Image 1: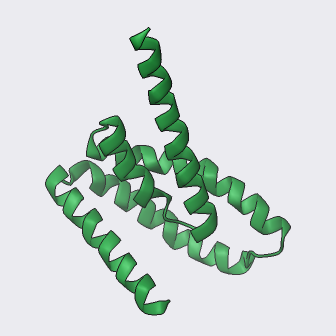
Image 2: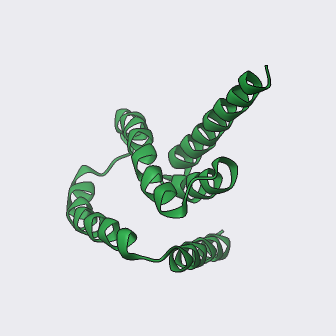
Length: 126
């Protein structure tokens, strides 16, 4: 019975992480990774590199869902999107290659610095 309870708790964690990540991604236009990565590491015990890579695969379908909503309500600048996607594809490829070469300790520090700077920027612009 304890095993069944632990499985239920684990799936509840999956659902909670997914819900909060999806809400953040839809609300802020990004930011799902800042929730998904620490949650997977601390709540699920996922290794740091795997959490970052997995967050990308989680965020893609969440972003697609948000795109449908935003597009149907006329909130997307398609020309701007096309222009930025070109650089984003290159940056995404380079970032993925760097992830595999980046030591976990450096990855944690860089991610933390990025989160702090993003938070400061949001507070200043608020």
